[in-house]
Length: 495
Image (tube, rainbow, N blue to C red; front, top):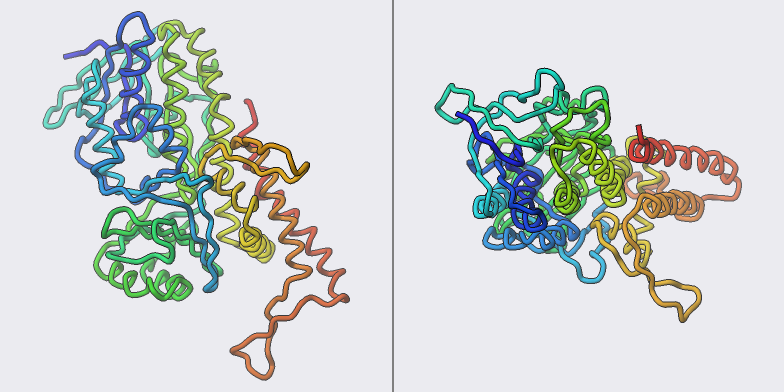
């Protein structure tokens, strides 16, 4: 058996399902004739994952552009208004700018809603089948389709299309084949370990809670339904053998006491699930080194740390851009497709690169693996405590939002509209670095109390300590460059 389509999409996750709907409802209307689209997925049962449960405001906006905002209804989704960062019993509120909202939900329910919209879209066939291999032209090596096996069958069925889009997730089976020599290897430096807390009250309702744990990775908590709250604990790679003991011994005591009982109950009730936090920079597709006839989308192409909840936002933003570009191109003309892919690659950069860099930069600061990173972590917390643009700027980058910058000079100047960009991220990142150095010089720090070792004294640095602090400042600034520089380079390099 075989089927002939215009577009074949492998993977009915966030990106694949959204693109199938967009190609049908947006792209097809702009073309001379409607598209025939096949969406292939190994299992159409509701997936169960511990990540992909927090959608930033820019992701919500992308859903609206795609006509998919209804997917957030009827799944017990929770409005999110920002973040609450907790460190040593202190809280700092980081609201989304201008009243914007994100959403948090059970990942599987959201996926099923997206798939339902894809099934209803005209010209889309949703097929449950495991894709086994790519079909290539024997002479040109261009991808012509795929061979797939349906459930309860051993027959390999051929699906042919002018364009094959691979969106099979972070463990993609076809990434190497499509990218060829252009492939960049993914790297994993940490894991998220997740459980669900029942009927838990977070320090700030309808806000993601980030717990900074001294000596260990951050903890992220957010409500995903009326009764369920997700807790994700970041652990370094390789993860400890006794995860439960590590969480109870090293992590829980540093979190708000109001969460302790629910965490103990969750660890006793459920298995701790684990997910690698991988980094995979996006490479430009359509070059001489990549396969003709096929492109990658979503986590199969580009991954970042899930700490900032930016993965779905980037994927949906990519779909918005790609669906419009595909409206005016002949899929069989690879010269046109190469130009389109280059345009797509650089059009997505401002938002995607900002979120990618921010995800790992924040993880390094919040994880604070070393004394100089600990200085940056403290400075970051103090920077947020300043409020105003010190909060609006960073959280707008995290949310992927255009925001209104309240200019200071001259007084009568109109506010400026600022879009996410790596340059704006660099400004705030190094503002945090220099503010961290300022904090190191002027803010009191704990020292040993000889009369009562349980209650350290808070003492400001003395003048005679300034030379050593100046040397330390250089090391702190260098550490900031080491964190940010390679991440920025991975995004701006063009080969």
